Image (cartoon, rainbow, N blue to C red; front, side, top):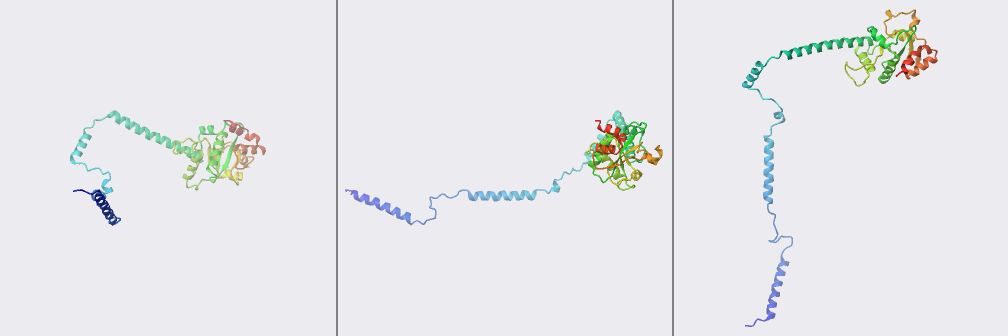
Amino acid sequence: MRISRPSSLNLATALAITASASALAAPRGKPSRSDPTPIGAPSTGAKAMEALAKARARQRDTPSAEALSPVLPAASAAMRKRAFEALHTRKPAPALEDRARAARLGGQAQLARDREAMGRRLSQALGLEAPSTQAIVDTVAPASARSWVPVLFVSSSMPITTLRTYAGQLERAHGVLAFRGMLGGLKKVGPMAQLSAQILRRDPGCEGPACAMRNVQLIIDPILFRQHGVARVPALGLLPGDPTQPYCERKEEGPASAQAAHLVYGDAALSGLFEAYARLGGKEEVRDAQTRLERR
């Protein structure tokens, strides 16, 4: 039987039209059966919930901070017995014990000597005790037929940096720092002793009795202030003799012999105060002090 060619073309065309119509009739926005679907999402969520449950369980089982504190366990009876047996079986070492005993005694003796020396220096600095002969020789220039000692009248109200600067200059000039009274009153020695240490200490950051101090005498003498009529500080005067000696030990011809001929006021360097003193007529008095101050 003969198959007509046009008939086969018509059949193919009909099938194509039917497929197009089916595609147009399908609703938009909905995936077809051939669209891929997420695989493993439900299993991933289950694993996350399981991990969270395990973490919360571990948190409940974790002990508190107090339980984690480093507490030594109680020693057992056997451990204590072993410890005491080890102590009883310790071998004696007489040489080591003798060395330890000698070191302890030597340290106690050195501490006593240091305390005595520091107490003597503190008493001399506060004017409560006469300085030793060696201290006078080291502090004051060798005595001549007529010598004058620079005395700088100061106050505890002055800045500590200014007092330290004057102490360094007076050390070279063999001078003395004079205060009217004690800081905190006569019944309190501690504040004045602390102030004296701050002034005389070479290193301001040093603490303790081993700090190096400046070789400067510090006296508390209200009579000296009254004799010179010191109205304000700082003030410079050159006194004959040694103003650090007690009044009962001073060799004076009269009340005027312990007084300075002039008095210079002003917050200036010690060299400037010496120059002002010389201009007032005290060239002879300041000559030796100026020479020592300029010497390095």
